[in-house]
Length: 108
Image (cartoon, rainbow, N blue to C red; front, side, top):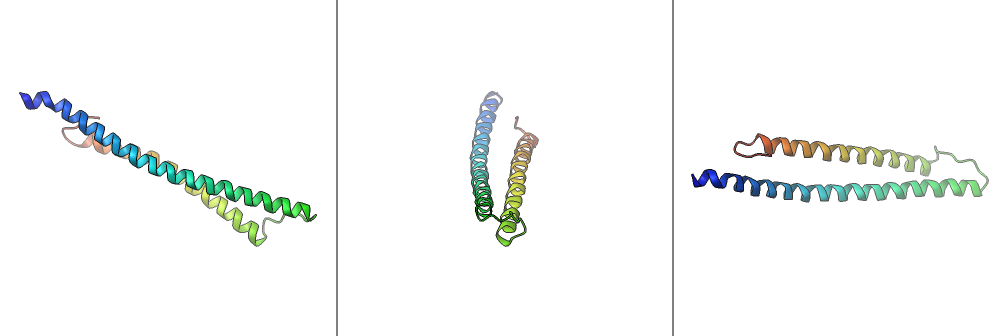
């Protein structure tokens, strides 16, 4: 009788602990994504500086030059990585909730 009465309270604390753990995981993953976004902004800035330098010299901007090519590849990589991490974060959340719902005796 007492066990049945305390079950919702126990499940509530388990849910709070689980959500607290998720907030912790999410905050560190969002921090990682923000760091990559800062790095991407730096790469865009480097590309802009390279373009401006070629314009001041009166040259045409060559994206195939070694520095420019490397910067463009880095930009492409960072864009893909950010998209992957954001997608992974969303899928991790859905898996996290799904796994929690599948455990017997717990409720979402």
